[in-house]
Amino acid sequence: MDAWPWVRARSRLADALVGFAASGVSTGVALLVHPSPALGVVAIYLLGVVAAAAIGRAVAGVLASLLSFLSLNYFFTAPRYTLRVTNADDVVSLGVFLVVAVIVGGLVSRAVAERARATRNEWEARLLSYFATKVMSGEPLDRVLVDFAGSLLEALRLARCEIHARAGDDVFDASRARPAAVDGSSTSVAIRAGGTEVGMLTAVRAAGRPELDDDEHRLLVEAAKQVAIALDRALLDAQIARARVDAETNRARAALFSSVTHDLRTPLASIKAAVTTLLQEGPHAPSEALSQVALDDEQRRDLLETVLEETDRLNRLLGNLLELAKVRAGALVPAKQPTALDEVVESVLHRMADRLSGVRVRTVVRDVPDIPADPLQLDQVVTNLLDNAVRFSPPGGEVMISVAPWHRYVQLRVADQGPGIPVGERERVFEAFYRGDAGDRSGSGLGLAITRAIVLAHGGQIRIEGTPSGGTAIVLELPLADAAAVPQETAT
Image 1 (cartoon, rainbow, N blue to C red):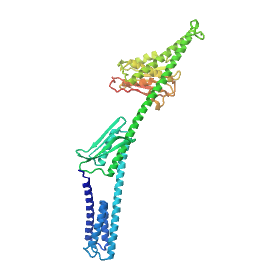
Image 2 (cartoon, one colour):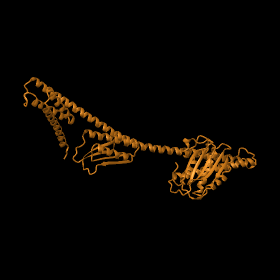
Image 3 (cartoon, rainbow, N blue to C red):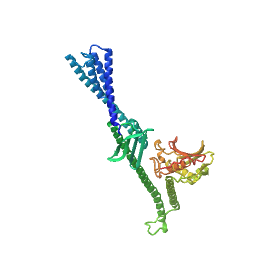
Image 4 (cartoon, rainbow, N blue to C red):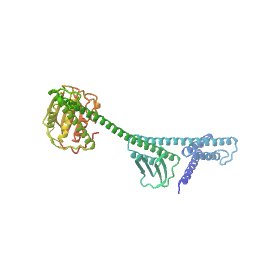
């Protein structure tokens, strides 16, 4: 059975009681004080009408006006204790009092109602603004919807509030309920986004409480609209995120294609040119050669060295591409064994002697213990660092290599006298295919990215620092103890 008619009757009875009480109190005060002249009595009754209209509603104000009119006539108008009026002036006074009392009561009641409505609208606006702020804060939408359901639970004095909605492939179920509350009447509002129903907002009253009134239902509708806006935003955010991932993927693919195309064609073109020149030499030149050339031993050696250098360069590029593929596949797992980092550095210096011939190399090696590491991967790290230092060093510049213990690490530092790297770019140079604006740009942009991935896979750390000469120092630190438990970071 619906309890709403009884509640409305009880509300009207409360208004009537307020009207009776205001009139009775005013009469008692007037009889007790018995002011003179009669104008004081009128003021007391008007005050009672204002109080009734302010405490109750318009019904209480009108009823208090009528009862005050009768009481003023019965107790304070001659002949007293009767409802007869013999004096025409008293008739006019009573009539004016009744009109004024009804008007004042109505105005006061309306002003109080407007104030209450304004306060409620402000409170509702704050509630909806709070929800909008939560949505914009970046918190997970499911948590935001649960908090919003709790806010509606308190605002509308509900037993339970539920929000069921979907945004694309995501489904959201949020609900809040009062402990031990018994469900009563329920009201559901559809959540519509773009003209399509995407969910439902349900408000359940406790047993014995009335259904939502017009203002409360309006708040529920506005709340459903706010939820729809939040779902639209979540859907757009997901689409933007997918578009950003696709754009990054396409950018990486384009960079890979551009870099690999350029860096593969350059050494191949050099190798082809050298071999073609050698094939065109003397009587052994193929019949289809346009012309024959005469080469001395030094020229032949230079051409063969060019073939060797470009082959090594091509081999390094392919090796870096394979290592990058391992990094992105999560397969970069070092085969650790006790390794002397200073011996790895000496081996790389010996192998890269020709490559380092254009710079002065100075090494500072202190006694360092062996570290658990993959020697092949460390060889690649040192090779990449030295190749990077040579590429950015001026002719005849100095490259300094130092190996020393550092707390619980062994530190390797490779410094050059090149143009240096701006502070804002020191993190970006570890990105795959990134190339700075200064120095030699012939590299593939993979060396430092792979170096960082290998160092992190060993549980170490790597950073870039400046040098007093304005160059660049790349510092890496590898732990003395096995760092297999350290989370690995995957380079992208």
